[in-house]
Length: 336
Ligand SMILES: *[C@@H]1O[C@H](CO)[C@@H](O)[C@H](O)[C@H]1NC(C)=O
Ligand SMILES: *[C@@H]1O[C@H](CO)[C@@H](O)[C@H](O)[C@H]1NC(C)=O
Ligand SMILES: *[C@@H]1O[C@H](CO)[C@@H](O)[C@H](O)[C@H]1NC(C)=O
Image (cartoon, rainbow, N blue to C red; front, side):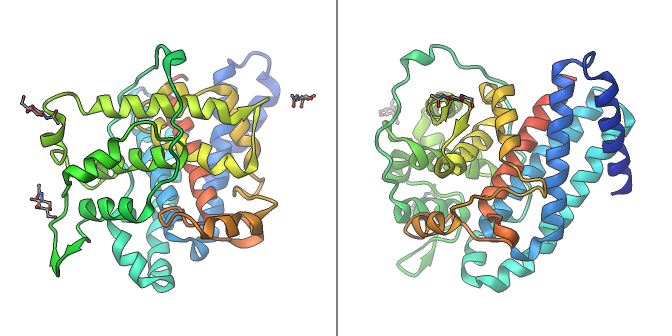
């Protein structure tokens, strides 16, 4: 930790003296690094209040930080930077590990069902990709996600689904789940849940689960279509450089899911600066109208259950915010 601080102190010093000569990317990189460090510190001090959804964000962040370390080692970053990233990685994996018993205690049943979703970092295949012909995209209008049905499809992948008293082996997909999860004209949380289904299949190690439905066409095509649609949706959420508070959680979800798969249109400096502004100085992400938000949430999604942490911080939003900053960090490492 001390070395992280030293490095950051140096960063701040050099920022002041070299501001005008620093390339813009370097400046942004350092801001993002400070954001990631603050978020890591926040969670390392408050992991007992995490919920399953908060840890899901932390695991996404952990994966991105691991990749940032790898990228940095590959391209011979300065030693100090590699050390800082390695230390961040340690902090996050220790925090994730330590939070597990608290999650189990809070809701043993939910914990057991979703353990494979949160028990390790998300290391997803990163294929750099840029979108073309965005003006052809029609944003999906169908956003009434059928959560119970979707959970059944997730459970089949996870291996926690039972049918007529029989437990279905993990990595199971049915024709109906495939159609539900690839259905067109979906938007908002419906399409992010569809994408999450494919992310989970990869995370859980089910590489051939969709072979019978894709007929040898590149399964990545499905992801390309979804993230292209999601990207256009994200751009519509941003108005005059900001996103309505009620939609910030959605925006973060969109960015981390697509960003960690390599959809680099999401890595926009203006969006990075915006998300950094949402983060509080203590590293968390919150919302002034928490109560109203939680009330709305309680009618909704299980895999996205929000919970209040200390001082009005939100577990799910903070986890997602952290993971989004980590996708930025991983991306920017390559621009140094
Ligand atoms: C998935 O589970 C269903 C039963 O719900 C079964 O009929 C099907 O064969 C399974 N698919 C695979 C690939 O195991
Ligand atoms: C896959 O190909 C077979 C034969 O070429 C065809 O009958 C079937 O409908 C195709 N399935 C899908 C999901 O495209
Ligand atoms: C956009 O933001 C600027 C600066 O914050 C403000 O002056 C302007 O009124 C805003 N425009 C709209 C349409 O909200």
